[in-house]
Image 1: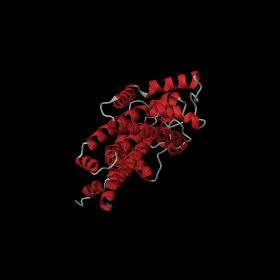
Image 2: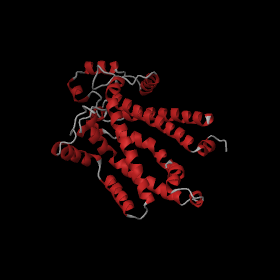
Image 3: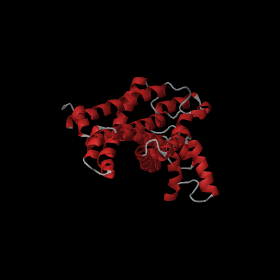
Image 4: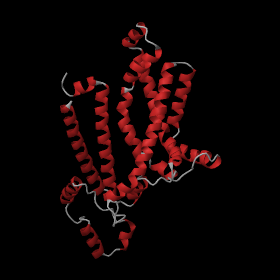
Length: 311
């Protein structure tokens, strides 16, 4: 197990280094000026001073080494768009809202998705199965930028059941979380249904039935535990996808998250902001994937034995 964890840590470091390197190179090849439209009003001397201030007058390889050194020390640079603010300060201020929204959406997606998948599998080719899968298809078909305004208008404005926007209290989290999680619910439901059907046809399930175990005992002790493994595998990327995919939902429901900063940085060619946010999201992804592998190994010890080289 220790060898497996160390190997995963090495992979994490290599992945992050590649992300930082590729992002840095791509940012340097973007068209336009990092100081936006205002740079056209600057004199040649003023432009030289700005480039010298941010180190943009140095060779690319020197800029790369300096940036890598800063990243290793937790410094993602100063935003070109907001010259008085560090990228890390902006992340520290805005990310909690994006994280909270992602966690709410993940909780809803896991709860509803697993329940729908289990119900569909236990009622294979019956009315409940068809209803659950129809709901899943609808969830995949309606994107968040369509569902979000509909929920905000009908549930928030017309019916007045929940706040149509803003980020003011627990009730204001519900509608954006539902809008963000709807597609994920469908994915998890379909995946859980397929996995459950596969497990229900295994020999050990037939043996359990032959021993006289009740249906509930078979489902709870044997079926769900084995069927949930594929779901656990995708939870890492799903979680990161929910956090990084909050952009449109944040705009619709006026959530003060990182989405608006990411969009503004792309429009303004804010190199440090784009690179910093990319590295930050990549760091979250590799950490979540690492934790997913660890959890996966505890759920099924055979996984860590094989990957750890003990088998």
